[in-house]
Each structure stands twice: as structure tokens, then as C-alpha cells.
Amino acid sequence: MKKRIAIFASGSGSNAQKIMEHFKYDGQAEVALILSNNPDAYVLQRADNFEVPTHVFDRHALYQTDEIVNLLAKLQIDLVVLAGFLWLVPQNLLDKYPNKIINIHPALLPAYGGKGMYGDRVHQAVLHAGEEESGITIHFVNEQFDEGEIIYQARFRIEPNDGLEVIKFKGQQLEHLHYPKVIENLLKRM
Ligand code: GAR
Image 1 (tube, rainbow, N blue to C red):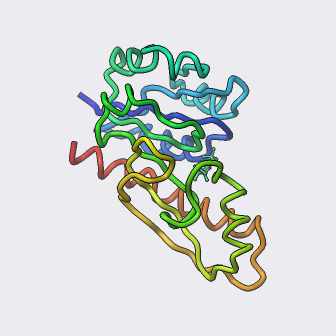
Image 2 (cartoon, rainbow, N blue to C red):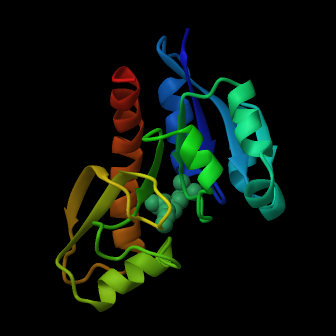
Image 3 (cartoon, rainbow, N blue to C red):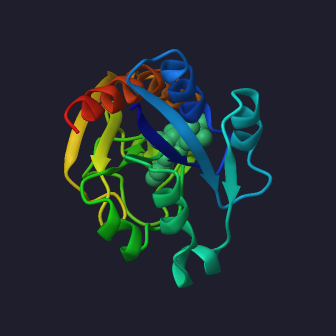
């Protein structure tokens, strides 16, 4: 049986898109569900385009009930992938999926991570600090923001004239290139 992936995303979902593309004709794994806390997230449209089922939930459902863990169990999900999901993962989910929940972060953790560090804010902080390089981090998820064990990092140079849009683009290119492959490799070991 194919390994089954669930993706949590709060926004555009360009990473979710790349992951769905990567596994669309894969014999080993498939994206079985996209979940979002945001009913207006573009990622839901992307999921529809791939005919991947979606589920929208609110804070109460995630933090006060077993709705999400029960859904993941029902759909026999093997790996949970966060792709631009901005809420902390609750303990009931961490307990059900030990070392089976991963996240992508648009910087070289442990720098530029933690609560409130997402999207453009991360790149702004990197720029303000005058860094000469940045990158992406894929890591296991634990009960703290951006603190789980690092699985993979990739780097890019920041040139003197690079602004926000440029480093965002460079980071996104790396995310899109590596996240699907890292997921594929993890699934092979599961
Ligand atoms: C990605 O760049 C991801 O690294 C970042 O959100 C973006 C989502 O983009 N995640 C974080 O900042 C988590 N702290 P997408 O919706 O186009 O995939």
C-alpha cells in the first residue's frame, strides 16, 4: 500500500503544490489530505486542482478535541507535513506521530526561528542583520516552534544588492526543489 501524506498549510501552498506534483504519479506515496486553519487559503484551491481531499478546522477543533488525530487515523496517514502552517502542533498529534511530523522553515535554524518568525518576517530579520547567506531548514516538529531535530538544510548566498523579494525567491526555489525529495527519502525509511 502507498504511504499516505497529510499536508497542513495556512496560506498560498506553493510547497504543497510541489509536493502534490512530485507524488502525483508516484508508486510509493501519495498526498491523501490537505488541512488548513484558514478557509480562504489558496492551498485549498490547489488541492481541488489535484483532486486531493481537504479539511478546514479551527482552534477549538485542533487544541480541544481529537477531531484531527481521529481524521488522520481514519485516513491512515503515515507522515504529516507542515508547509507554511503557522500554529503550534498540539500534544495529541505529536504523541500519535512521533518523528513523523516535519516542517520547513525559510532560514538556517536555529537562527531566525521561533514564535512569530514566519514568511517575510524571517527574511526581513536576515536582511537587517546583514547576513551573507541564508537558506532553508527541514526539521522534525516538537512542542516548540522551530526547535525539532534538523533533517536537512540548503544554503544560498545573499549578494549586496539582494532585497526582500530576491532572497524570498532564492529561498522558495530551494524549498520547492528539496522538500519533496526529503519527504520521499523519509518515507523510504518508514
Ligand atoms: C514557506 O516559505 C515556509 O518556509 C514558510 O512559509 C512559507 C509558505 O509558503 N514557513 C514558515 O515561515 C514557518 N515558520 P507556501 O504557502 O507558498 O508553501
